[in-house]
Image (cartoon, rainbow, N blue to C red; front, side, top):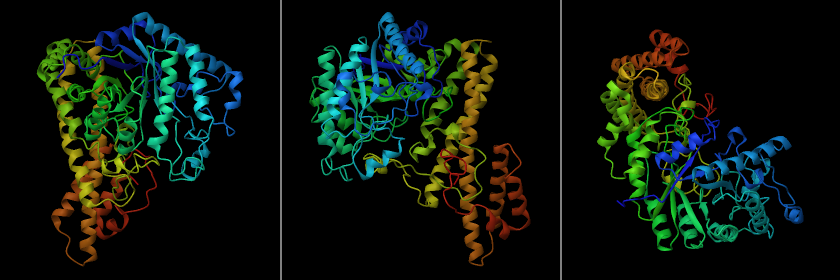
Length: 567
């Protein structure tokens, strides 16, 4: 491994789950002490938590002399457009730039372009026709050039910019759709031209800066072809560390290595993006789940890919809490050779008499995170939003698939479920078994953590974090077991139903197991119903029970999108 693997170490202050973290010298200095040297100036998340900027249009207006470049179909700007809020958003950005300058950190502003407002009803144009901002319409490229010029003039302290061309309200015409100018023109021929123009514009405006492009939502092939068309003098790549998503446990896949190798061959620098703190999209809204060995392994994997010159937080960091994951990042950035054992000893020191227990605790939580089936479906992430009192229909695996090149190609090969077809019993069982083995380790960790909390220094930041960690961990365990019990009961009910339909005797062992699973499920849910009535019917009339419960039905999303097994 290289002695100093990451030239750029990019942090984000605050996160979508907790965007209110103060932008002040203290928090920036904490991140700088850990080893971060660059700050993303905005959280830049799709649903705009706390009305954070997401597009250039959020913080700058097109100069009067260029107003003619506005689209004939103006795109809604989804930030709060009141004069007071617009002025505050601009003032906040300028203050963040000033603070970064004060503590000696570089700055990156993150935006999506061209803005085509995903949530606008006209998004259907992505599939059927021309987007409002079409890259080949003869206006969009100059429009964004002028907007970037105005941005640079208004915010001279911004060093680099990070541009998404999908998501972040940025969407592109579909070459297989009905756009009259983009039809039949491959994305890998259109997008690099736009990226290069924006990168060359930024270099002209700020010769010491660079435009980083995140080719998010492009297929693997489109990304690889695009890399060969980028201008290495001014464009860089900021890549999720796998083609499917930012995932702490799946890092540096073949796509990432191939893309970095192509970029390195052309002299294009690459930053790897992932979750570095205890808050992440995977566990949202939990903010205190610590698994520091996962973070160390993530950083090592990214650093070992020749050509990666930086690491970047993807979701957001909370430096005002005693986060062991974030502390592990600091250990690695100061010593890339740090071992797991050495890191755990250092991380555990502030816990005093509880240090040895904390080492054991983190080994178990890290192992459990890696065992959990994050690849089963995009909807297994944001697990804190899952409803433990699941639906009483047959267990399901909800798939996600957006109308983007990546989802309709490469990601179909990464996630087990990208559609809402009826899952095979073996697929269900696979998720059940992996959830169960992870939950058992989380449960063991929980017990050790509770013992450690009694020995940790009272009223310390570490004890406060650990107490919240145990609360979040309990919630994670409850949701993992809800999936386990729901799936196993559904598969058992299907087996019994088949026997009943065939007129064969019902094996007592299956009935005994189904009852035990449902009783465990009821205890896990912590409420009497709806499981109580189902258990009573099972004990009274098996045929009636099988006609009423754990039956396949429509995907009605009755418990919310992120209750993976509930229809």
